[in-house]
Image (cartoon, rainbow over all chains, first blue to last red; front, side):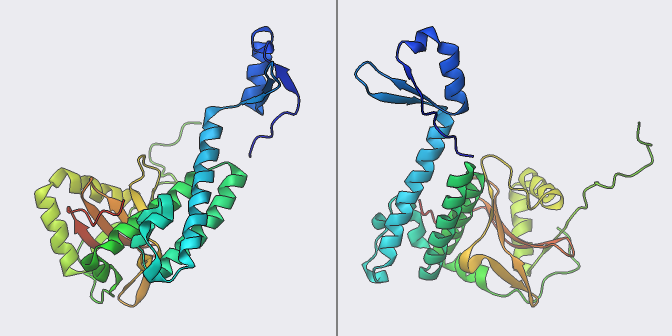
Length: 154
Length: 116
């Protein structure tokens, strides 16, 4: 679950006087520290911040890509997709499916705090885009195989 | 209590059979095996024991999406998966979860087009 930030702020001098208490609160729910000029700082696990940035950066890319998808396909470019430029290689239909999948999973990950499923989803779509971008491979991976070798074991 | 040496665990994994879904896939598998026998032996073991395991890090096993998500083999629809054998090599396969057969559809030691 996303950690809620404690409302009460420590003083900057508490970093020395009550360092264990500050660190414990930072580890548990995030610690607010008020500097001498009144600026309030947040101390929390770096992993939480990195995860939140990762999710928010992807959300920004989803907004960019969603806006780009409103344009006619001829008027789109990979640059408009931001960090999701690789998805430009997908078919128009798959691009829409991808951005919907990603939006749904981002909401789940933002709420749960877990990004493993999100990373799996991105990896799956990236692999799909790679295979799809190879025209010969794409043709092969979409055709029906009518005569599998049922008696052969590899 | 110690388990009897002759008893079999109810959780013992059931292995998958690995079969080519086409003569092309068979030829590609054999060519890859000739080119890199250790790699293909390791892949055969992976496909036999844990073809749907996505826990390896870095993540190299993917369930394809969109128009590549489903493959029809002899009239039956299966999910289509891809595993990165090496930086350049890929194998595509479809698990028949009922019969526990892995249908290998393509093997390539050449990288598909980069899209990064």
